[in-house]
Image 1: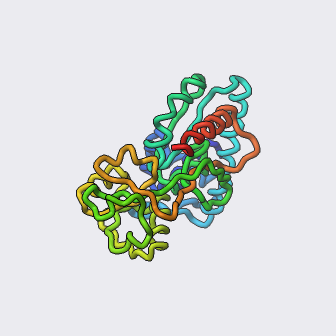
Image 2 (image 1 turned 60 degrees about the vertical axis):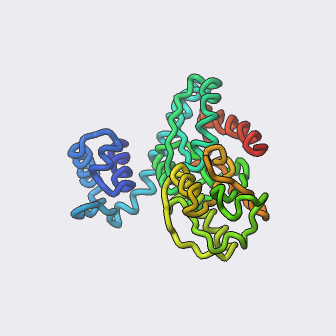
Image 3 (image 1 turned 90 degrees about the horizontal axis):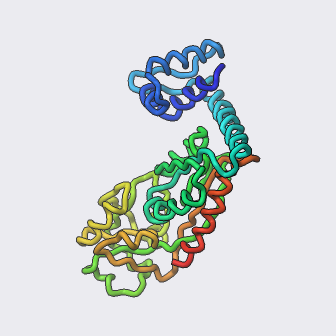
Length: 295
């Protein structure tokens, strides 16, 4: 059994496809398939059921997966620790972030981290929370900045700050002249939201529930940049994080009467040793949050 075979196995399990796993790992699909077959022969067990359009883990594969992920995490951790000891605050650092935080909070500040720690090779990936959790578990990411809570075994969650959730309306909307919005005033409105998989959607739906506002999806997307123009033309309203106000264009963002927050934090796989680059990034991240709290 070899490490690259376990890595390929985890990639196929994660993507549900030999083709997608090969593309993700940067190898030819026949080579990846051959290594999976060798792994199955070594273990004496079939790990995947090959279906017409996808593959599924067998009982043996489901048993192996958490152990394979743990092995890969331990190897990555050992490499990171040794590299940190050898070079100080240096080496590779992979950070994930959700789309409702990346453009408004993280991206504008990252150059400051790069200037302070020029020997850290930082890689940033934007995905929804479920995908980021998968990548953390697979050892593809060191940590991720997300909305909390995240209920996933083996994950350590740490809150960074709490951010108000506001209502975005068009300038001609009946609520546009208000200084704040009551939850009851949301009833009867058409709500435009992010697609399923975005943790901010869950925050918004909880507010709709509190307002006793039935949600009938009129438009769903992955980005507020698509929602705000539709809100501006009066096609509906939306709930948005306060940090997105600078990109709201012709919309008016109003606070809720009973201030409502989302929790922003980071998650990582629970482990005893972290590399110097990861420790430095978390410390830097916490420094940035003082400004986020004040805005």
